[in-house]
Length: 324
Image 1 (spheres, rainbow, N blue to C red):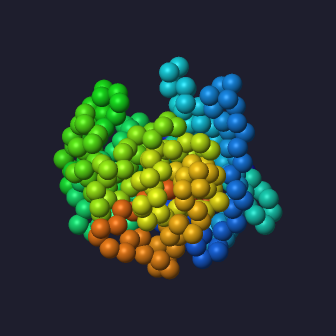
Image 2 (cartoon, one colour):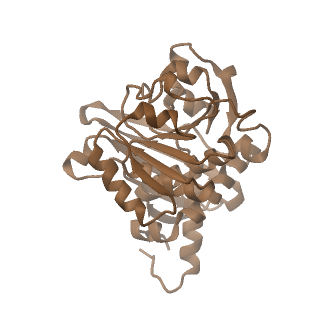
């Protein structure tokens, strides 16, 4: 019988301390070739300032297949709806049985946050103490939770064009994480004092300046998730050691898609994937002066690995009724 797994079930089961190692393992297995994952398919809807994306994958270690159908509608928060929502269909690859239908909106946010935490672990300097978050929506919240699991910071610094959003998040985090949390209104100053910078903005215009980013900084670029989107100036991207989650997807819809199109960088400028870092094929950084950049586009295998774990937990939790 197909299980129907709700958002509240996902949030209860997929805690960040469980999700970070699951995503880290998924990256590793991808680098080892234990994954089948066709490119993400976009259905662009410019009339509605949004799009839908179909994301299929097969995860050999868990013997699970599935597909996520996810949207990104940037105007939705203005009418009280989430910008991102999703469902995931989980299948038995041998029989094609539908094992579960999962509300995957929160799952998407949680696994994306975990990816940033994993990247910091492998690419940031070991002595990093201060993390700056540019954009204070829900994804920044997940990024911070993951950072504090994967590589805890002493200071969390928040910046948003809407200062109320940053202040609200600071109040929430004060009771949830063991770190000093502050809000700033000068992005240049924040960048120059940060060891790790994470950007989670939806815009198509870059928000940082190259000269603001100091040697040794690690950047998690999360917001660019479609063709033409870019959070960093191409000149900054060019001087970074670039780690991607997956080359094809990043080159078409990640932070590197614009400088690739502009012919400022090419494939040979990419150091490798985060999965290669996890399994030790390459180093996240070569020295303490490099500026490192993780280009996160969000992979179907992240969703599937976490969905498999959630399904397993539901299977073993006889006290709950997840059946539809």
